[in-house]
Image 1 (cartoon, rainbow, N blue to C red):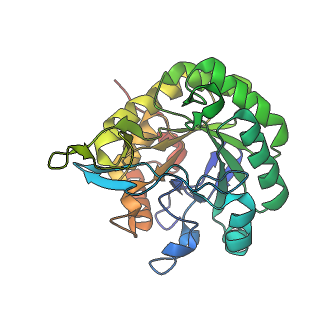
Image 2: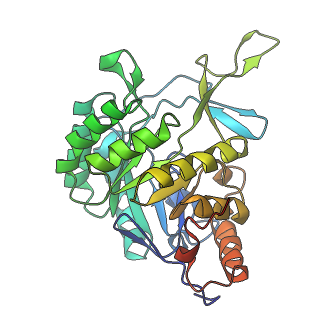
Image 3: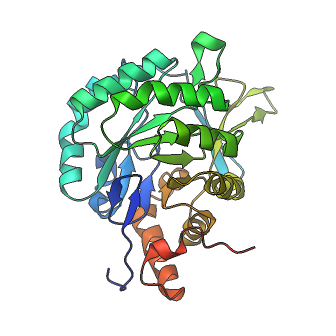
Length: 308
């Protein structure tokens, strides 16, 4: 509290020293950024989405730049829970000891795959402060539709996983039917919600007449989606009483402040970590300065303080 403002927040039972988190897939496992700053100064990091067994993901090209953002079709490539813990577990446990909370994200293509991933996280990653359930994955067993694309489907997967998780459970939602699905996740036992995930989009190479990615479509992230994300965070905050982790195009402290005013308890930096590896501490400093200018003693006073 250099400024005198208390920046600590509680994200569904995850006690963070400040509201700044990092988005799955954009921050590696934290150690990659240690050469730029002390990662433990952040409130939390969220690991790359992790499945019970390794996933190869989609073929290249997986990324392309577009106006005000990037598109990706990574396909949640990852070495599996055991592989991540073996390679990075010591660092992540040390990061927790240094005061930065670690949130392990679980991914799957079916309810049973989610259950398997969560069981392994519970067994092999006791250092993690929480588990984030990414319900934006395609459900292969049900024709490829989003695992959490309807309130009924979202509720089903959260209810199936909830008894297996002894720590706070966050649910990362797709940008669809937000108020309904947010309420369904809360009723099913979620401790907090993370939103939004990327927005499905398309980019065509006009010279080759082919997709600029290996798939016809991909997930759009970055500043282009920020106003949409703010609106959806506001909608979710009006529908539920559990905390919200706001994600989507946060590139400045002002962007983070918008999320908080809309109802987010914590804010998550994603795409901006790629062009600016020092985005975390910079946005934290800008956010704290904004809180000072708002003449509050606690950042939590500003959560949901939007007035129409």
